[in-house]
Amino acid sequence: MRPAFLTCLVSLCTLGACSSLPDPAADPYGLWMGKLVTEQGICPTSDMSSLRIRGHEIVFNPGMTSSTLRGTYEKGQQHYLAELTDKGMNGTPYRQSFDGYPVGTAIGGTYMSPRCRAHVSLTRR
Image (tube, rainbow, N blue to C red; front, side, top):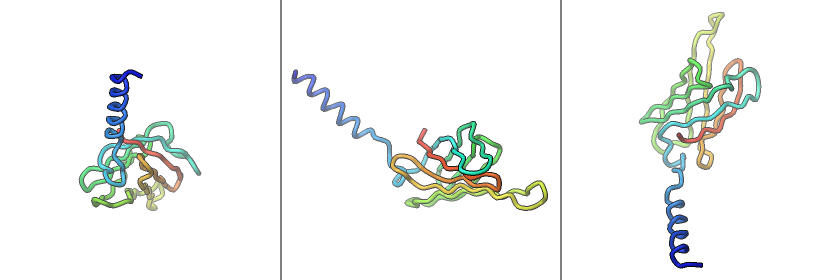
C-alpha cells in the first residue's frame, strides 16, 4: 500500500470519529424529526413529527398537526416530557402527551392521546 494513501485513510477515519453526532443524553438541544408508528388507535402518521429542545423549553408537534405540546427541560435531564390539555368536543379534557428519552444517537418516545398511542424515533436535523 502506498504511504500517502494510508495516511489519507487514517486521517479520514480520525475525522469521521471526531465528527460523530453528539449524544442526546449529553446534548439534546436542537431539532429532532421522525414519523410516528401507531401502536393503538388512529394517529397522525402521514407526516413527520418534530421535537425542539431549546433553552429550558421542549416543544413536540405530532405529525405536523396544529397541536403543540410543551414542556420544560433542565440541563442533564434524561427525560423529555411535553403535554397539552385542550377541551374535547363534549367539554371534557383532551390530554396529549409525549414522553421521550435518549436512545443511542436518537431520542425515542411515546405519544399518547385519547384516540392514539404511538412510538417514535427522532433523529437530529
